[in-house]
Length: 263
Ligand code: IPE
Ligand code: IPE
Ligand code: MG
Image (cartoon, rainbow, N blue to C red):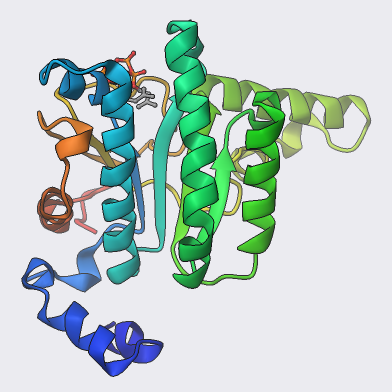
């Protein structure tokens, strides 16, 4: 594992990773394969400081940049973040509009660095319903990073787990109607291949910040056997140290998947 970290790094960079006290005592064999984060609490973070909710979203982007860096340093195979749910359209138009512009800004500023970091970017959700600017940027970014081989970084944007399962079900029904498959052929593998996460490993770790203990329609199928980590910390205050604490805790979990053996 360490060899992998040193492989493509300049010696000084490699040293920085190995000597970073943050990364000490991490059992790299027991890191999650697919971590999914519900980045919640931007509004509360801002309100607690007498700021507008939008200031919380801006601060949330900075937190995300740092967390992605940790995922890159530790070579986590997959990181999925919840940026905007299918239910978030219920918010005031001004907040939705701000968020959409923030996503455009974030993407346009971060694409180069993500690409340099060998990140493989992907989007989950109804991307086609977003603004032309955001849609185009997302498409360009995905195409540009398609051949990268590092962290699979998935951004759930206009995403809802129920909506995703419904879309997959419709697709399967369409194929059945066209005579391409019969009901007996419908199994978990087929359904998974029709989800936005097709080809990604199952989610084994869900982190939610800001104190609420619910899934809010996030990765309902994929998180079937995930471990959970809840923290009262609001997303903008979720530092690399908080992330490492959660990852270390994941390493201690006993996972049985319905059986009796701890895997
Ligand atoms: C999460 O923070 C960001 C999005 C949902 C887009 P919130 O905006 O939900 O912040 P709280 O939960 O209201 O504090
Ligand atoms: C979940 O947070 C969605 C995102 C973090 C993007 P919400 O703030 O929308 O969830 P609820 O409404 O509290 O369940
Ligand atoms: Mg919230």
